[in-house]
Image (tube, rainbow, N blue to C red; front, side, top):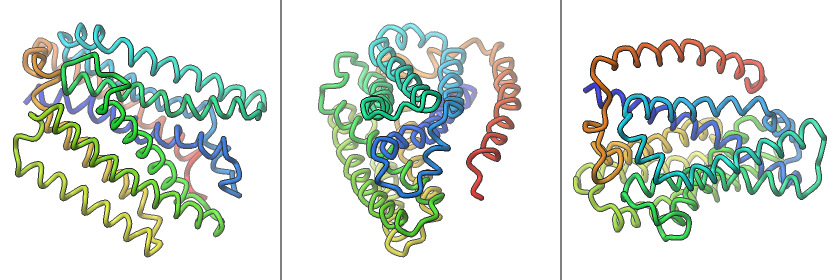
Length: 310
């Protein structure tokens, strides 16, 4: 039970980071192509260095993973050095572009294009770590079919989350029509990229799909949420779409997460043989609770100051 609680903590942090960072990364599309939206007030609000605070969840993910499962640090640090280094490099370049855009009022296309590329290459590089986690092989990054499927899934997810978020906050009728098409196309791309990813995972990591009943429930839940999303778009109930998409992403993320247990890294590293000493567990849990007591109120304050709908 302690092992399960411990692995849920970094998984939850990673999911929150994925949702918040997708909003950030997707903004780069609207920043590079300003003609997409007539009202770009929300875009200017979100292209701000203050949103780098979302990286705190990435830090919490890494710290909690290595503190609860210290024996896994050798495997992660050795075999994931390349994708993590490239991902952090692109995150740094993205922050540099943001500084030019905001403080230097540097609106040249080359900076916005670099900002766009880094905003997508960073999460794609970080997401390639998943290949090593589910296959135990560190030679399939970036160029294999599974890597391409993961990259396509990440791109579609970012576009879907960010466009649905701005669809909720947008105020002009002209922009709403454009965003409706954007969300619809992104949702179609998301579902097909999801099917491709599942198919390739079935080929490269068959152990994930040994329990047929769970697989059918998982796939059926994703299909129902996807059809509900399309129905909302057709009926123009767009205010619920962002929440619905977050639920859809949660179903995909946590279903694959639960199917992967008890492995941390297939096939040798599990949540049991890499767990920390039991006597340290209460101290670690207490420290993370104290950390959340400070972090969550700060994030709520940022929400109230910057992204609350007026």
